[in-house]
Length: 299
Image (cartoon, rainbow, N blue to C red; front, top):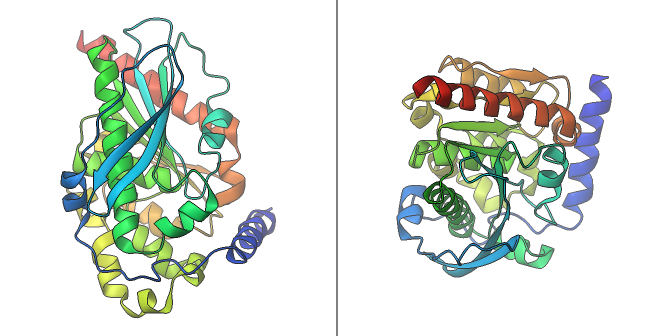
């Protein structure tokens, strides 16, 4: 069925190209990600029984809106699971609802982060107009996820996982690389080299000509393979799809193999893999169980 999974990825890209403006059409000049992260200023609203929250963050590109939701567990001392969605996922919690539909409130507190520029399509087109805006998106999502994680730990939560699908998986890895404060990281259908995704998969057709012409600069900003190799990779528990045409399997599997990271592989493509909610849920819950076991042993 390889042809089917790859055909779905090709059809998806062909359809999206009809409505997308060229990515980074306003340039790829930008400070590196760590400077964007350091510049983010945000204040969480008071956490109540409400599920949905909005946040305004100050960034290197000005003020941007973001948000999150919390599904409270039944006890304060349950672990926290922070989830990052994929690019152009609207509503932003679509995959979150699919993956965590079967997760009980006795298992964890669940947090879904809404990245900047994901309220509607016009906002997203603006957010992908420049590298500065894209890195601001990444920085705010990472810092917001961390802020909510810390808030729940302060309320008594014990242990935390950061999870994400596609771009969200890349964001989970950025959290690992830049902050490293969670107990575990579960990137789904993602690896540490976003530059390869944009330059060497069929997604390169979305890039503006000037971005393609400065591929070396793009790679310097979005290729985190060396950072990943030097990190504490034992806390990273990835899943990739063998027939993925967005996150090409051979390249990203090699990224993990170079750091001796055990990899789970599913026989899907990028789109069919992202919709395999039961399979993704099972992987995340195994990782959560491993975290809980580790917590019990350490006690």
